[in-house]
Every structure is written in structure tokens, then in C-alpha cells.
Length: 403
Ligand SMILES: [Zn+2]
Image (cartoon, rainbow, N blue to C red; front, top):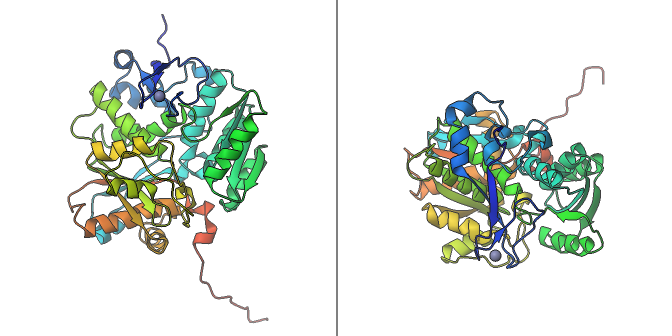
């Protein structure tokens, strides 16, 4: 018998424990919680190993046993995954954390980490017979899902705040998405999607954690970090948190690797970084709460962080509490300053959300939460090139002698 491409076994609800069939199209649990995918890890261990994975192509599908797509032929790919884990020695020394590393997601298709969730989510949706997807977005996820949907010959309907980065709008339109803007937040966009979908049979809602497989794509960030460190864990992972799928995914991935015995030791302390203009997770963490309250009037230049209430907030908080992690806010001023510092000192123009993580490291080192010996991995979730308005160039206009 040929080896199965995926060891996906079932879905379950992390809130009420209800089980769901993974081979039918599923949304959220009847209790309202997101659903999580589970794998037969004995099956995974019997057919894969760190040594075997080392010889596979350098994309996220190298972890296919731990991903939900059952047939290799159903994979929809634009070459996503295995982004560099870059040492950041110069800014690291300046921040007092010399063992600072940056996972640079700016090199992915569409220029952001959203490509991971879109690649896996669209592939699995197509495999299950979904012909059209619909979602609210702060821009980058919409762009990523639009292009992967186009590649899969699937229709897409995208609703985003009018204030979302302009380029993401253009990308959705170029990929043939049906695109709508709302004068409001991603939460308002989500309500509109739910309303539209009542008239659109056959469309699946692929908004953040509204289906179980985007997180499986995001999980590969954690798998890659472990593999790139030689199958071991860093001390700390610092993550810019909007909807929080990435931090939940990394936590899930490292848990699966521990269970497989492919890594050992303690889980890294996870840090959720938010902007002070939208910090529902930080507020909940500081109160020791297990859920967040909707944030009124969210506002930050790091647009991906303007998520007033994340559907998976309880999972984010659980990951922070379970790993001895923390949650911090940074100001727009601080993150913009560090966006420039990283470009100047390390030669890479990162997105404002990624820059927020450097500002957070600065703060956590100053408070003593991070020590000089900590090996910390910062997630840069996208290229700064998508956010040209965050960097105002100062250049003098020269005139030739003939003028
Ligand atoms: Zn449930």
C-alpha cells in the first residue's frame, strides 16, 4: 500500500471537545469555537523523520504528513515556505540580545506570511470540493487567498477595510477577486461577509479560524524554525498578533514535534506583540483573563494588528500562559523607528508588524524579561515594500548644470 501523503485523522473543538469529520467541508464548531486538525502521529513517525525531511524540496510541503491535504496532486503551490532564519547580529547587539534571529516571511509569494495559510487552505478546500471562497481581511490575507484561488481556478470574494494597504486591493483585483471595501474594521467586514454568504450557496467562509486549515499552513513557521535550528527550540519567539493564527499555529506545531520526539526540551516562551492603539490580547493577558474584550476604535499604522476581537483569542492566551510567555504593546512611533533601524543596521526593509516585534524586544530587554543570553526569534510577517507610506524618504532634488 502506498504511504498516505497526509496523516490527518480528525478535527476537534478545543473549547467543548466535540469531534468532526475531517473529510467533509467544516467551518466552526456549533459552540462557535474554531476547529483544530489532528494527525495520527504514529503514522507520521513511521514514514517520516528529520533525516528524511532534510532531503525533500525546500517548501512547506516537505512537512506533508503533518498537513491536511491528502493527495499530492491537490497541492496548489506558488513556491511557498522555507523562508530564511536570519541572524540579526547588529541590531541584536544594539538591543542587548546578541542571539537575535529573524524569520523573514517577506520572501513568500505575495510578500507576506499569509501565503502559508492560503496555500494550505485553498489546496484543502479544493480537495474537499469547494469551488468559491469568501473572507474578510485586513488586506494581506485577501491578497494571498485571491492569488491562490486564481491558481486553483476557484472564485474568491474579498471584503476589506477601505484603510487597508492599497497594494493589497490591487493584488486582489488583478487576481480576479470580487472585491468590496467597508468603512470600518475587519470585524465589520466579517459581518458583511456573513450577510453576503446567506445569498451565496457554495461559497466557503475562509476568514481567520472560520475553517480549520489556514492554521495548518501557518503552523509550518514553527516547523521551519525548529528544523532550521537543527531540530531544537529557541528560548523565545516574538510574534506580531492580530488574529493570532500564527502564534496558535507555532504553538501547535512545536507541540506536535515534541510528541513526535523530533525536538526536546521546553517550549519557547511565546510573546504576543500588539500596538497600543489595538491591544485586546495584552489587556486580557495583564488581567489574567482567558478571553479578550472587543477593542473600541482600533488604530495603528501596523494595519495587520487592527483586529478588535480575535475568534481564537482564548487559544492565543492559552499559548502565552502555557509557555511562560507574555504580551506587550508598542507605540507606532517606536515600531516605525525600529523599522528604519532594522533596514539601516541589517539591510532588510521589514513590515511595520514585524518592526513591532523589534520594538517589543527592546522593551523586554530593558525590563529584564529578556536576558542577554536568550536566543530569540522575531517573526517578520511581510516585506516593507507593501507599506511604502510608512517610510518617508528624505532626498534632495538635484538639478543638472544645464537647468
Ligand atoms: Zn465546540
